[in-house]
Image 1: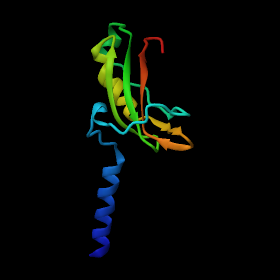
Image 2: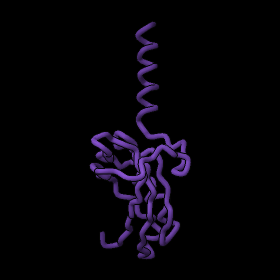
Image 3: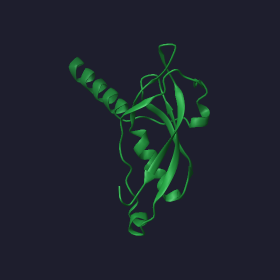
Image 4: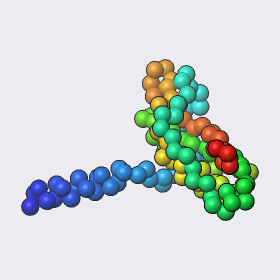
Amino acid sequence: MKLSRLFNSLVVVALLSAAPLFALSVAEITDITPKVDEPPVPIRTTAPDYPAELQKKKVEGIVSVIVVIDEVGGVIACEASKSTNEGFNEPATKAVQKWKFKPAKLGGKTVKVKVTIPVRFSIDA
């Protein structure tokens, strides 16, 4: 019985930690370091899904995505700030939510930062 309870607890923890939960918006996160010695560096990226309708029409574009990166390099908040076509906003933010970063540093310590990342949608890419 105890083993079963332990297993169930481990399954719940695994499920909760499998995908980031974006409960806060970028604006709600206030403990961000404004200037750093070393900016965050992407170490794992995911390309966005090209919306079929826009791809069919050969529409290209770019989305500026505001991202909050925590002290371990995870994306904790993400939102489109401006774009050439709103149809690109959701695929761009969904892709960037999956990115992993080498965290930013200030004085040798990792810190939480906010950066803007351009996400391009190009037919030839």
